[in-house]
Length: 74
Image (tube, rainbow, N blue to C red; front, side, top):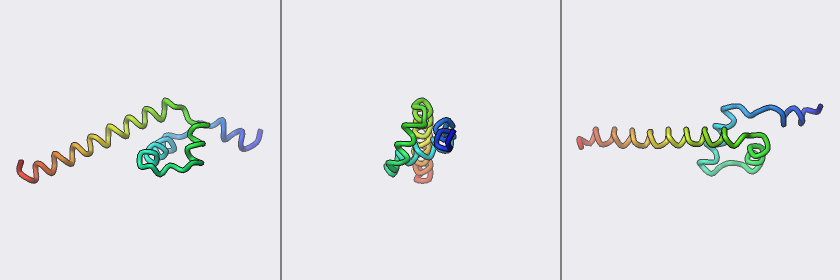
């Protein structure tokens, strides 16, 4: 077994999936990283993390708007 075979067998970590999702959301995902995601990652992991990141983003924007409105006295 070569090191490449063992790399293909190991699953991606949560932080690796999170980093890929964040990079793709900002449009800075490299082609090499994208190819690695498609060959090693499970689509369900990316979908779940993508939905969670989107939810956190929406809630953060909502919280900032609420804070600004409160500080503005509205």
